Structure formats: structure tokens, C-alpha cells
Amino acid sequence: MQNESSNTKKIVSGLVLLAVIAYAIYFFFFRNSVPEIVLDEFGNPVQAQVVGQDLIDTLTELQSVTLSDKVFNTPAFTNLMDFSIVLTPETPGRNNPFSPITGSR
Image (cartoon, rainbow, N blue to C red; front, side, top):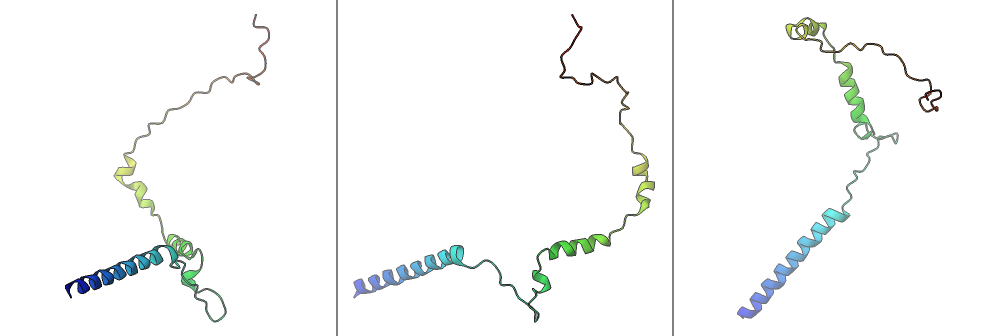
């Protein structure tokens, strides 16, 4: 009797393990990951699924952004130093640097 119950437990645990493995294979490889497109009564996709809707929303948010000119009057901006170097003009080189040099001997 003990032998039959241990065999039954092994069979049931094996079937459960196979079911878990089969579900994992289905979940990772065969599950449809593309959401269905929901259409309105005219056959157009609803607004949440329009391609590029996130860009349109971001553009709408950016159009409401304003820049105040008070930033340029702050001490942090007025204390900035210019470390740029003024370039002096130099004489240009030859018209065609690849042409042969003549008369240099």
C-alpha cells in the first residue's frame, strides 16, 4: 500500500511539473504580446493606440513651457567669465595643396 501511494505522488508531482513547464513555454514563446487594436464605430483606432500619440502629448506639454529672461539677470549668470581665445587671421596656403611644387630647386 505504501508503494502505491508513493508512485501516485510521483506521478502527480511529475504531471504538475510538466504543466508548469508547458505553461512557461507557452508564456515565453507562444503568447501573443501584441495588443489588439480597439476601433471606434468608424473603424479608426482609439486615441490611446494611435502611433506617435506619445510624441503628440510631449509636443503639447513642450508648447506650454516658457523661458523667463530673469535668468540672465541673476548673479550666477552675470559672474560667468569668457575664456574664449581670439583667433588671429593667418595667411592662406596654396590654392591647390596637391599640385606639384615648381621652381623650388
